[in-house]
Length: 360
Image (cartoon, rainbow, N blue to C red; front, side):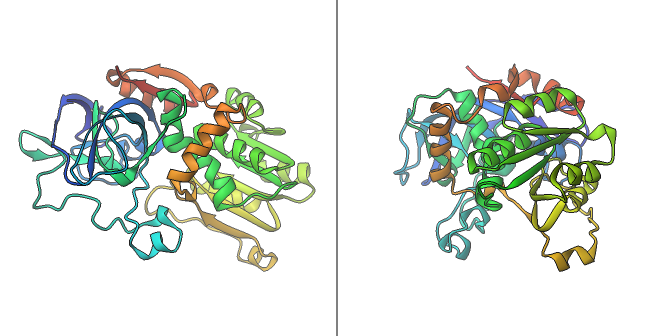
């Protein structure tokens, strides 16, 4: 199969032939139909996060089931599925106490003495997030899939696989935004726009979008922001506090930078909660005003929207079909696998909400 392979940090991905193994007992071979290009992948291209190379990146995908292992009973060939990196074992403490997104992943990947799922000329190729979606096929554990029976396109299904679930879930599951509350979202890319939608669905009264790109602020209004702040003008904290008479109840950082993470905490009112969605580079530390904790301000992380994806994702499909969730408007560019490096260029330019690679 063809796949986009990363061999070195800060080098273009190469379109190469990669061998894919036959499905193991609980594995499923999925033909990729659509794959979104997420900022998380760029972190690994740029070396801000580490992985074993060569690696097939990509984790926001949807497709059709080609074949299944002899113990798979959840899906069958021909089923339409969304892939999710929050693969769960269903047996560890986190899974059995209701937090499968934090699963210890016991027994979900092949051991080193088994044939690797992906390889080139006998050399193992890392499968990013146990998915490797920048490829024509994905060999995955059945517990990384959710079957979708509603009538929805693969493009929209792929967006639900990461960006939509991460942003919506951060607002509705992690932070549990309350009706009538005030919200600020820092960073209006694909995830940030979905955090705005999540806050709106949860009943937030005021939603402030913060970004330095005018086009993204325009899009943020379409997605539910009641106010926008152009971050390029500086003094964001004071401007938020002026708009809200002291700060917001909930803030969401969807960029992954030290400065904006600290800013998300600084714009809270007493008793407010900051949720960090963006991937802050490994080793980077953030600094907060210790006295602020005396006023019960809180800061927390969110992993993939604290999802229960086999429940959440079909619900998000229903929200979309009811006209309550925007997905079509997220797609700025439709590309092919061969365009993957261009997709990263568009992302770094800030000119896209999401690029989606379509497969035949």
